[in-house]
Image (cartoon, rainbow, N blue to C red; front, top):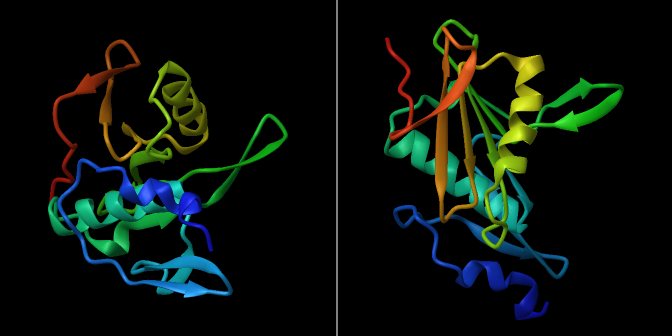
Length: 157
């Protein structure tokens, strides 16, 4: 295993420090996913996804039972896969998140990607992150457009 394959681990992320269970398996690093209860190959995107999940559950109080991860959906005859979907307490889509590698700049294209997925999902809130920058958006019901939020949207009881 070469350290350059895991250089993303050296990039400081804008999250609190979390103690993840990481192990080597057949020459590759894996990280334990507490929601799926199994080890996954540690990629830059998975590193960011695990941080976001830990942040939302430990610091924002989102129940683990409301998460759906990496589920498939069809869009224009293409099979796509979203990163994180948080459901509301009634089981409806609430917050759809796209995770990018730390070195990937968040852009309008990133927002378009998740907005496209959301045409099938219908979440009132979207989020994009590369672990260093986090942007959240809420649906303005009057204009039917998403506007940027200053904080993480909260599920109301």
